[in-house]
Amino acid sequence: MQKSWIIRTIEIIIFIIFLFFLFVPLFSTIIWSIALRWYWPYTFPQEIGFDYWLQALGIIKSLTLGAVNVVPAFILSLGIAIVVVLLTMGIAIPAGYALAKLRIPKLLKGLILILFLLPRAFPQQPVFINLMLMFNKIGLTGTVGGVILVHLVVSIVYAVWITTSTFSSIPPELEEAARSVGASRFKAFLKITLPLSAPGLIASAVFVFLTSMDEFTGTFFIGIPFVTTLPMTLYSASGSNIQFASVIAILLLIPSILFMIIIQKLLKAEYLGGMGG
Amino acid sequence: MDYSLKKELSLKKEQKEVGGKYSHFTPHMLPYLLILPAVMVILLLYLYPFLASFWKSFIGKEGIFSLSNYQKTLHLYRGDIIFTFGVTVFSTLIATFLSILLAVYLRLSKSWLAKQIGVLYRLPIFLPFVVVAQMMRSFLAPHGILNLFLAKLDLIDIENPLQFFNWIGLTFGFVWKEAPFMALIILAGFQMIDNTYIEAAKSVGARLPQIITKILIPMNKSNILVAVTLVFCSLVGCFSFPYMLIGGKTPGTITIDIAHRVNYFGDYGVANALGVFSYLMVSLLAIYYIRSMMKRGLYE
Image (cartoon, rainbow over all chains, first blue to last red; front, side):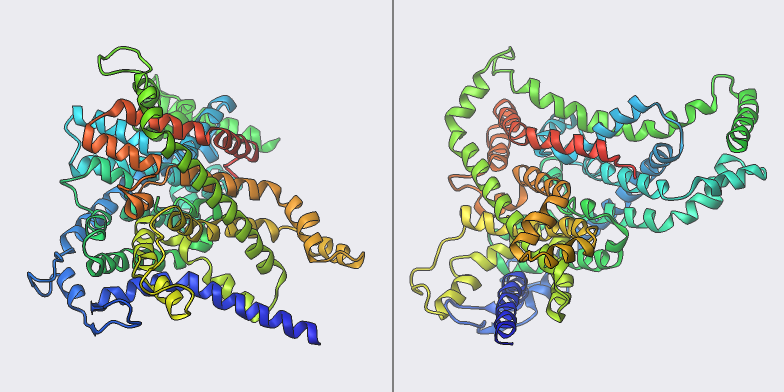
């Protein structure tokens, strides 16, 4: 009786420490985003308000706050992410289908597998700087097209993995049955396999979307200074204006939390580590 | 048997249909055509620049083969290379320790608290490193919440707050972001272990530490190693968080140095040599990871 009481107390203390370290960094960002004046060492800000929010969202224009309108950056990030999703899924769905369902020699399959594991295993930053050199030659550095391509590289690996494992989980008998009554391979794919794998494919698309929205390193080397996505505005605000940077940080984490709550059950644990590198 | 026969027949039929129009196109080519775009993207935009970092690191200022980039790298950045390795190993060890504890707790406890923690701990997994960096900048700043809290508890002098924008803050952020991810992978492995093993051990008198070290960890070794590998490799290559937290300070990480080399000096030779050092740093674990994923068959 005595012992279980002690264990219970320890559990609660650890729970409080856990909550402190897990959530206080987040709360600190939220409070800073609405703190107009906050002098050290006061526990709470002296003056709070949504001025930085309104400024960042382009609703008010004040020269004293030192924050800019981030709506254009948000729209640019959104646009890039949508193109990246279409492009990546358009390439990954056929590849995933072939790897999961069609006959490919074992050796080739092994080589492709290694090729698609390399980007996860080795640091990507040196790759981006050489990509930057390549893109310099053909005038893609500093363009939206260049940024889209670098986001494509970052997300294609995950997209192919997820689509492949999704297609593998659909029993082949269903498509065979459709084909035995005269459907072409393409029709069988369209009518049987595609609808059945929709949840996995949607999860994969959302994953690609978030990867593109949050992508930092590739955009830093390929996009700067002309392509300012939302993470880039966060980076430039971060050193100089803590309130403004906090607003952007919260804007960036809302879609992540929202989407991942919805799709996390559909994804294998290992893929989640690819989020936001 | 009937099945494969049918498959054969339908294949022949298809061959005839398609073969009529394009004599060089056969269904045997279909898989290759479908994979081709994905493979081309990786070959051109990943593998080529990846291999380029090796040979460019051996090309000196005069455009000929030399080791000058490596000499310069070791001369200027030896401390940073060691620092990167040290912080990454330290962060990975702490994250591994905490994540195993968390996963064990979530696997064994049925309490209400465990249920809440089981949901809440996943938050950092979904946040990108840029956001984590900003959160840590305000949390760990000299006049940040953590120092404020420690001062209110009288643990530190309010005039003399602790400095966290160094290896401590870096480790804290790395662990904050990666330990939950590791716990997620490790917990998935623990849940595959049947309760009967644990109950059998208990019935012969095993206590909690023994259950952890003799049953849970050994039976889940491969998942733990994959989690360690993934985290170590991504931390060595992590750029945004160190750059935003300690960019410009010494010692810094390899990734910060690469960015400086490229942005301020346009020196791709030394940047690539630094890149090769980061490849070497992860090489053993990276090879282990690729081998174990191949054995497992990623496609399942």
